[in-house]
Length: 157
Image (cartoon, rainbow, N blue to C red; front, top):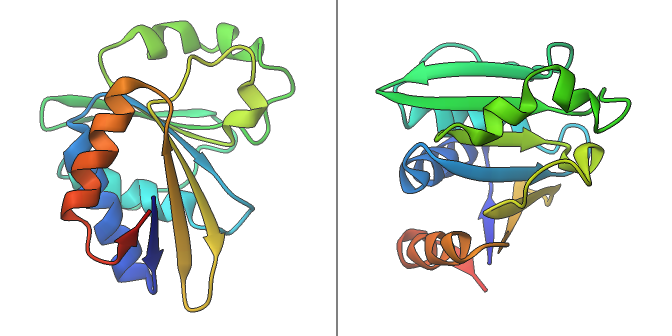
């Protein structure tokens, strides 16, 4: 499935739609080059649970927890991760064992340690704006994408 995101407003709105669909749990892995819009999409996801403040990528802290609307969302940025085993030392096992939503930027840096994603989402620059390509990796992910496809204008398979 792919979705064209022609501007920042649409990009954030798509994140909100995705956030509502995820219902505050599961694993969403965000792929894409620097500047592709992974954190912008995460801002939309967090808005679905009532967050109205700024969202910055947790590049140095690796994990930014949010408690919103009775949900727990963990935003992880693994760009600076030296070794996937470092996730063990920062409490990663507890984060992924929690019945929460884990949004992970740069999941390839945690390969071999991270559990499977429900949805892998790749963002790429596609003038105007960005293009999001989504693929399910679990049965829950497949069901979520089927529901998203029914409700997302401008989406295509």
